[in-house]
Image (cartoon, rainbow, N blue to C red; front, side):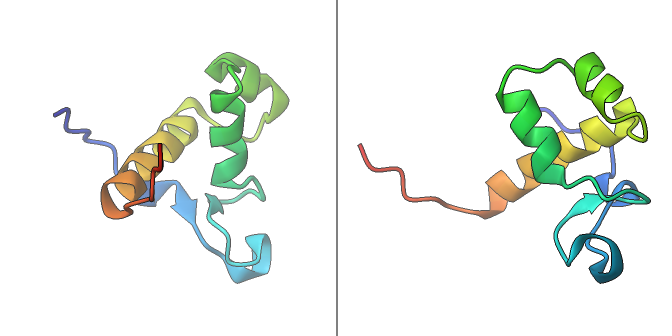
Length: 80
């Protein structure tokens, strides 16, 4: 297993005044799910940075680390 030294908590918050309690990148209104959806659709990190200039590469990596932590916590029913 790969251990990451990134603390995604430095980049992600759930601020009710900004993102309606949905997880977003601190200081922005960009939902973590938007970043992950773009990555899942095959967008490069560079392309995402061009589309969302207020993001940083570290914020994108934090979104991935956050999703990895969630995946370790949640068990989804994966039927055949």
